[in-house]
Length: 74
Ligand code: SF4
Ligand code: SF4
Image 1 (cartoon, rainbow, N blue to C red):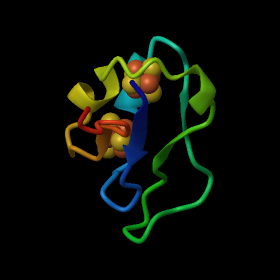
Image 2: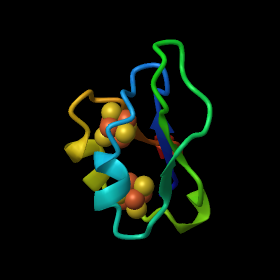
Image 3: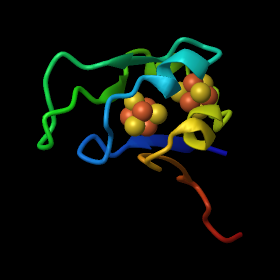
């Protein structure tokens, strides 16, 4: 199955919790602010993401989601 990792950058408050818990060191804090004036997290190395959902669970603002892309009925 194929998954997509999505960070809602305008929901993110840039706390960095997700960056610290990612076991694959995928995430970093951006150098540009979002609409709220926070520096949001982003996937700096998306190719290393194993879609473990740890960052989604950790985020206090529910800014990260993982969706299944190929959920096509047989
Ligand atoms: S899903 Fe897992 S591997 Fe991917 S960015 Fe989040 S914590 Fe890292
Ligand atoms: S844990 Fe959530 S609010 Fe904090 S930096 Fe990551 S995405 Fe943003």
